[in-house]
Length: 119
Image (cartoon, rainbow, N blue to C red; front, side):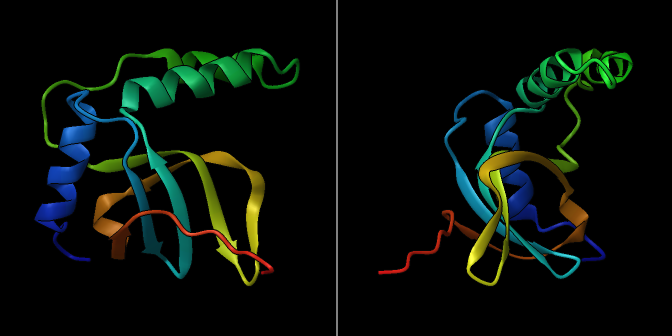
């Protein structure tokens, strides 16, 4: 998208304001479909920092994520946790991952997350 979707920016702003951390969303960006729950950027950064700190080979990168999130500007990114990239009948990773997506790169979106079932 050349101009970010104002409604999607509003949804992200509500998540950032702490009014909700349970918002499920599915987006299409650069040909990928990502589905999961949105988290405030500070919470997302903290969790990524914790994961990196626990890794002997990646520990040095944790400081980049422990820096505070920027102030009161409108959100520019969506921060997914418990998220999957959908491919065919698979969600990768199966247990969910942490993804950061630029709002301006979202071509389509819908409220809710998708999962596949063999039933």
